[in-house]
Structures are given as structure tokens and as C-alpha cells.
Amino acid sequence: ILNVEQSPQSLHVQEGDSTNFTCSFPSSNFYALHWYRWETAKSPEALFVMTLNGDEKKKGRISATLNTKEGYSYLYIKGSQPEDSATYLCALYAGGTSYGKLTFGQGTILTVHP
Amino acid sequence: SAVISQKPSRDICQRGTSLTIQCQVDSQVTMMFWYRQQPGQSLTLIATANQGSEATYESGFVIDKFPISRPNLTFSTLTVSNMSPEDSSIYLCSASPGYNQPQHFGDGTRLSIL
Image (cartoon, rainbow over all chains, first blue to last red; front, side, top):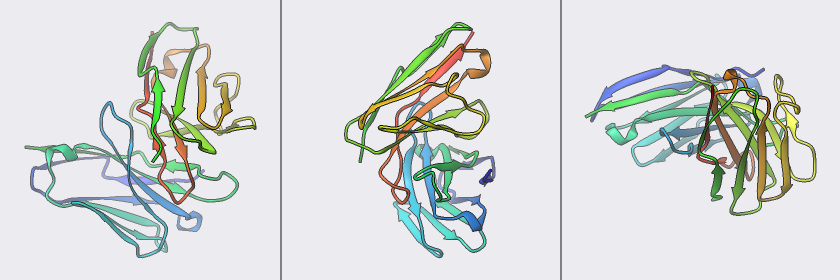
């Protein structure tokens, strides 16, 4: 059983603050790392798919980094806005016979206060 | 990117009954997945549904409880059978074009069992 862990479990920040959270995974099982944003009553929305050690991806105010050797990824949000409030999920694709199968972390619940 | 329509969006069911959840994709996809999120838990994969073969279930999930159909490349159903309050969860379907591409999710089915 793969162990994908996210921290913190929840986070409250003020509008305009920058924030970051962590996804840890077993480095020996790495093929790809996904980040999703899941707003209440909506479907999870893909943010990034990262496959290369040292990769850094950016989408607007959100960016992510990846360290496959030590088994972690960071997600950063610059200048948080109330609409960034959501659960942020990371998921590991570990390869093998289950093509496309993802193992999700428990998520980080972000609340941005106006 | 694929758009997935999932129905029903929510339901309240009686103990011992069964409910079938449907997912329709607007394009042909090889892999579809069914997930569950119990309160306070991470997204957990129930099974992988590939067209033309039987679904592959994860540990802890069995076909008698969660029968899945995948009659073609754009449609899948998940049935939650003989429901109990422990089955109260959000159920999500997703479609994946490949491990290095993001998964596309339905909006989820919020299921409550009385």
C-alpha cells in the first residue's frame, strides 16, 4: 500500500498571504505526481502533472515543485484570494500494471479569509 | 479535455437498497476509475473499469458490493448494493488518457444512507 501524505491537514490564511503545503510520497515508486484543486460541490480540477525531478510548474498564482529523490512536492499559492479556498489534493502514479491508477493524499483544506 | 457527466449528483437512500451511478464521457477513453471519499478520508480508488474486460477492484472492495459496467468507451456505471450507513460517501468517476496526463472527474455523487 502506497503512503501519500499531505501537510498540513488544514490551513487558514488571510487574503493576500502567500502559502505553501507539502505532499510526501515513496520515492522508489515514483512515475508521476498530480495536483488537483477540489472546491465544494464541484469536480476536482487538475492543476499540474509532474514527471521530472526538479520540475517546477506554474499556473497563474499557483506553482509547484518536485523532488523525486527525496519524495516530496510543494504547492505554493502567492497572494491568496478567497476563491482559492478549496481542498488541494496530490496523487501519485506509481506505474506497474495498473496503468493510470492514482493514490491520493488526504488533502490540505485551504480557507482564505477576506 | 474530456467532460464527464455524472448522475445523480446526490441521493438519500434507505438501508438495504441499491443505487446505480452513471458517468458519461464526451469522448472515447480507455481507462475509467471509480473513487469513494468517506467523511474525513482521502479519495480511495474502488476499481478500474476498462472497456471489454472486467473491472479490477482494489483491496477491500468486491464486485458483489460494487458491481461496475463498462459497455463502451464513453460510459460506465457503479452500483452500490445493499447499502448501509457506512456507504455514506462521495462517489466520483474519472477518465484518464494516460498517467502523465491529468484525470478528468465527474462532479460526484453525494450519497447518504438512512
